[in-house]
Length: 277
Image (tube, rainbow, N blue to C red; front, side, top):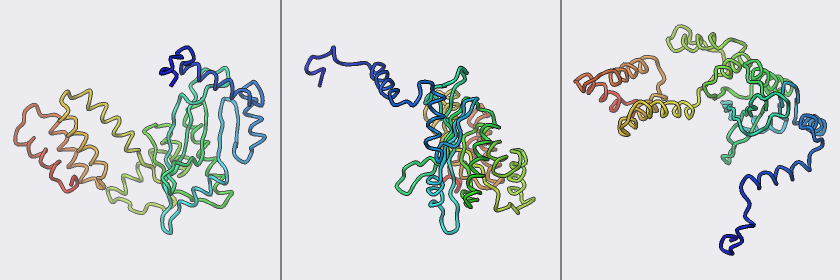
């Protein structure tokens, strides 16, 4: 409307608007120093802000969020939680220049909204720091007689996160957890304790990495789309024999210089296999 009226001098840049917004919000601060402001905020809302500490770390969760997670239970199944981290949201309030991440564990609600269950904002991204938020939340659940309250965690491919999940919720190393999974897959030991919290790799993160690698490897969109298709479908594989057959055919396609009978058969297997229908 301002452009139509010709009042171009009154149009502010995005940077100017963000600055004005930031200054307006700063007027609501309890203290000019960010860290002291957070400490005062915690004293006012101890039921939600569980910790403010240095090196910079904030942990938040509450009984209300625990109640939301508890509502996701069905009569015979516990829900999964989804855990991820993102940057560029919070500035570091200390002299430490390390990048600050927001770590969030969320669940989808009945109306398809994403609800945070527990969160951590920190500049310390070691596995032991991530372990601490998991362990603290587990303790919180136990204290409120709500454990176990979920059956699995969906995560990205961060080793620090995966190791922390296994240590905090299962009390074993990631190597030991993978050994349990392998033994069950091969039939060596099918007795997996019901108390084990299963760890799942996020399909979206996986396919993003696959797409990036395929784009760098192939110039033709049809080839790229074919491999996206068979790799995405392979996520549904549930036993090692199917995985072995799938992997063999993929290797034949990727390593063969010419289109011979073996290549045609491998391509046919991947397309016509019941797994991919």
